[in-house]
Length: 637
Image (cartoon, rainbow, N blue to C red):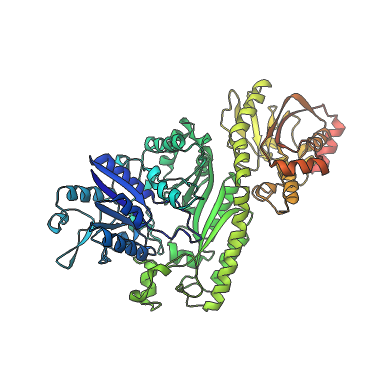
């Protein structure tokens, strides 16, 4: 039995650490045990974890900022066991010649196949320079001279890889942190075709490749089977929305397996890859939140950092697209770039603050120069720092006023410290609302995306409706056909030009109008189906009773609802326009809500149906007289 230890080094106590572990090491662990008979692996987060395992070889994964800690752990290992230590991860991938004395071999790029070759060499007693020179993607020393054998060849057929061993990845975190709660990430692809100047990801994985839909579905089913409490998965691809045809296949496979009703998903996108068609696909697979690397509100800075293809206007476009489709948006921003001035900083502030109703969350980081990136090279050329004097531990996206490198040439450290603090407070306050409401949001989306179509189909079938026109300010996500009924998306202008006789579904339409009565009067005299929320009214009461009065996502912020209805006000609205409710064709939707404020609410403000989330109701209009019709038309005009 050959024991191979895998050590993940991180500062698990810094604010941005999510304690998720290394999915890369989990993949390597599974790959080694699958490909090489007699290999046993263990993942740890300290040298002592490794020593307890008594390994014969240890692989360490490190970023540039965790390199000093990785070297310290390597020294501790060497003090107790004379074993080969291999260093991989982003730092070696971007800096292949930075092989420190504590490390025997560096792996430059994807580690699965290179690590397997090293284990086989160890088992055959061939872990010597003459043999290492035959393995691609290594850095090592031969009689004191550094030898580099290029990059690890990209693994083109990713489905060959074993599914990551999350049990081993989570084990050390569970052992070291009593409050640890697993967070789930899945890679459906590797690589990024873009070359942002501040990002090392394309240097680690320069070519874009993807898993088949079957492999991804198997990965999701493994998580569903072994972690029944997991309801949210982050798709950690650098750019999930890059290729529409591939996304179509993946969404089809996820829906066929029923996983769109099992998990909410989060993903990353680039603004110039997002379209209405892509948004519809993301809704179909139950996407909750999309993360965008926006970086800045200044087109000048955006172009310098990201090149062409994106702009401030494009960011505004995708925020509105997400809002239209019921998708939540996250923005990643960077401040403190070398060429950024106060006007650029203000433009970024305005982009975030001016879209507080469209951003679910935002994260503002300090421009940090990582070795190997263009930002690093440019700062070195401008004399902003001396590379040999940089303490890699300070290469942290969280700004420390006393120590962190400041690249900007246009403002003082004192000014930037204050500005950075204000940006962090802005983003934290914005993100806090989404975090607090995330459970409620998931309940609402589950109702809207999965239960509503089923209820609507039942109502249409019961009413013998075979064709229904849909009027909505948002993307409905309703399948067409819905059962036996054909759905037709229309505009108000379409209805006025061609009144027709088939029923009209008002999908959240009334909630967004300042004068819903006048709107109803302008519609042709046909049956109406209406979906209307009560959620906002009740939720505002709950927030007030909890001492957290604020504008929430479902109180008008995400969807810009101007009003919410009770059964009484909804009935009065329709009856005022000569509509009668067909009582037998009526559904309400309910979601679990906090019991403590609910009891208090019932005592002091007995609203009608406070637990009801929404109503789906069917209305038939009484005959209008000619004089009534003429008066309504004149009032609308």
